[in-house]
View 1 (cartoon, rainbow, N blue to C red):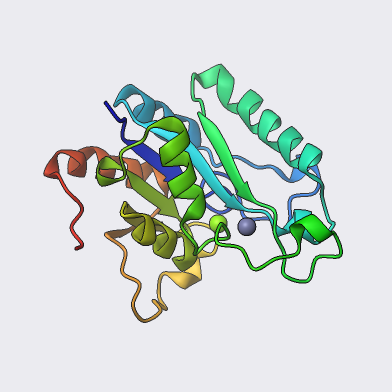
View 2: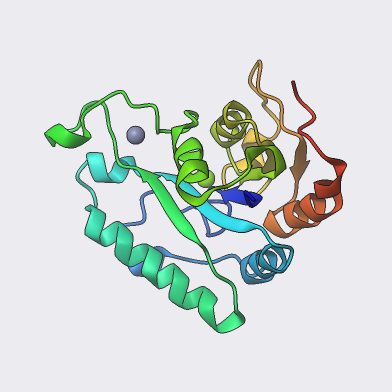
Length: 196
Ligand SMILES: [Mg+2]
Ligand SMILES: [Zn+2]
């Protein structure tokens, strides 16, 4: 049977928003992230990071460095027992000087392709899944994939929360990832997505 998942934006949601993270010392995990991820795991959710990484297409970092950032994040979470199951990223940039990254893609959020790909790869059930992010593009991505979406007021959410764009509606706006996890655990039994 398909598992439920929580799809998480990375920057501004599980770590501090620092612009392009091109050095490991810029990786600053929020103090509540480990607890939040552990609670999700205990509740049976797969945890999947969905992240736009145009820094790759822009030539600021390469895929090997992105992988190093994610291994470092794994290492910082491991002592508390928190674990991310998978990372999905969009490396594209429309004006990239690197041919394979130069495209208008469907995987860059607000596109939903990375969430859809993760659901296929990992046998995840969108109807019982959630997206959490600090930007409206995260909410739109989740909505497009048929998962319930929560905007958090960390990172860009501190100001974006007050200026919702037309046609994008979150299922909740909450202070941070830990509050979002509390909401998810209370809501999960409510059944099918509210929209549609
Ligand atoms: Mg973000
Ligand atoms: Zn892409």
